[in-house]
Image (cartoon, rainbow, N blue to C red; front, side, top):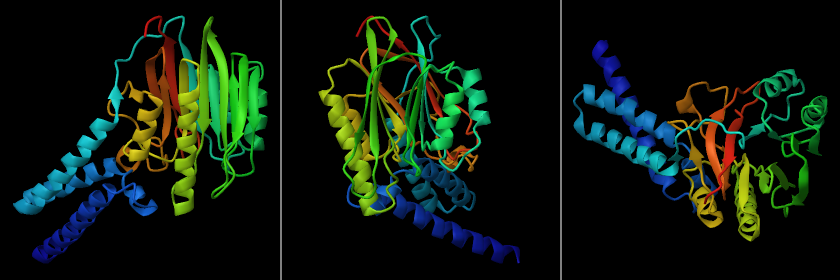
Length: 323
């Protein structure tokens, strides 16, 4: 009985190894179709799968499958390592400001925990995505703390609300061309330090679960990248739930073309979705805060989910006097 059970588990492990190998292979062709695009985002899971299967086959002294599992683990580990830049965490200075991005699930209508968290965390600028009327109403409760607000709520998952302690020097809302759905990009400017303006581009492209949605996601990222390249301001932040991980070639093209930095102060870099899967190796990083110019990252951390399927990302920046 024990031998038969061991054989069944080993067969299942062999099947899992085949699935893992096929998934890693398909991830190499992310640019070819929306289906292969999906496989590129699960590098954390490939590492975990490779470790577990490698240990199993190693314990059984089945060397070829063990080496294959470890190779897949190392390959995905390298992709993760190459996709993140880590900098030392620095103490905040008088010139520092804190900005928070949070996909606050549009189905949530009770925001008491969010209001409480913002009162305790005290970010200077907050971008809420998936904002509906209930999110808008909750933001207005904080009008004394955040006297400057932009409200673009929607009935679906693509509204935004921005809260700021700094006055907006300017802002605009850009409507993207519709491929699969109507969506917006928000650009606003604030001045956290006299003589040093910061431009923020906020966007929430759709998840790439069909060819049309993938095309829309890529189009929105590409157009925003082009907007940033044309922008004459020096200090720029691009943020949002982009429904894409740093492992995607599309993400890398955004970094390269817009000359943005994708930095973290925590190792390993934290995932942001889905929060109900509390084990980090079951989550992926699809919420981002990128920057360029004289902005110096002092800290980047993940906040509590507060009922959403996403965790907020909170970044603290200083404005350097030198390039």
